[in-house]
Image 1: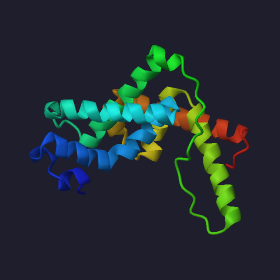
Image 2: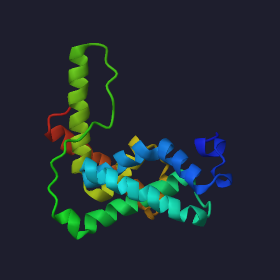
Image 3: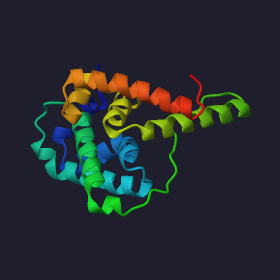
Image 4: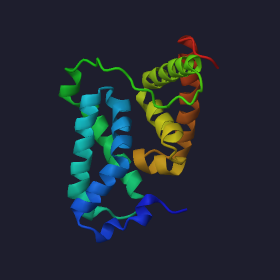
Length: 183
C-alpha cells in the first residue's frame, strides 16, 4: 500500500518544499491532535506551527526508522506534553469549546441534531480521559495508527498500550454513559 509520502519524493525536494507539502498533508490533522492535549484552539495552532518549524530544522536528521507521519506525530505529542508541563499552561484558562472529532452523516435535520449531540458528548468524554488513555484512544481509533506505530510515537511497549487501550475504552464508556450517552 502506497502512502502519500511515497508518492511525493520529499527527500529530493528542498526543505521548504517538503515542509509546505507536509503542512498541507498533515497540518489540520496535527492541529486537531494537539488540541486533544491542550484543549485550546489558539494554543493548538501555536504548537502546530512550532511542530512544523521543528520539522523544518530537523528534517535532515530524519533517519527513516518510521514513516514521516509517525515522526511528525511524535514531535506534536512531545510538544503538547512540553506545553502541558510548562508554567504558561498553568496560567491559562481553557474556555474554547470542543469541535467534534467526527462528522454527521445523517439525512434529516432531527438525525443531524441527535448525531451532533452524540458526537459532542463522545468528544467531551474522550477529553475527560486521563492523558495516558486519551492519547492511545485518539491515536488508535481516530487517527488509525497501529499499536506498533503508537508504540514508536509515544515510546511505550505494545503490551502496555493494549492495557491502556482496554482501560481507556472502558473508562470512556463509563464517562459517556454518565453523561447520558447511548451504548
